[in-house]
Length: 166
Ligand code: FES
Ligand code: FES
Image (spheres, rainbow, N blue to C red):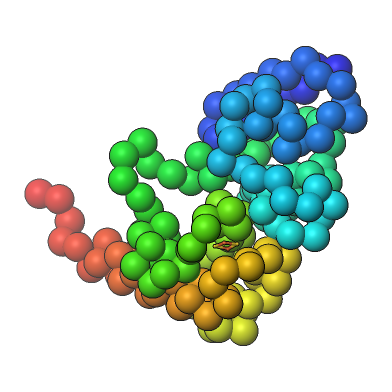
């Protein structure tokens, strides 16, 4: 089956079995190995990607379900050089240790912050409830996302108050 979709902003045509799992398409066909496989059963969130802006477990999505959709992986959220403020906050606040859960956590956090740039700790915990972490105890992840939200808000307010270009 030919699948027309957009992956990390690039229009993409895939010729694959309609039942192929999205995580396998990404990792094996597209070589986008930032998306991790943990449980393979929709329980751990390591495989989280954005589909049309919603965080979903790519191990539970099949190829035919991305027809016409926009898929964004951790690679699509990462600049060519350096890190985003969200990623920097994870580093600064200790929101990652072994890193296996981190791509999924960042993607889930991005989905939240794109909708709500003023989340409280409970809203953050709810947004990452499907993402398991065996290392950090979650507090530092929540702190990382709170800090990133604050940074992004202050950047936005700087843009809002910048004088017009002459
Ligand atoms: S690998 Fe998809 S939820 Fe665990
Ligand atoms: S940092 Fe190791 S599982 Fe989260």
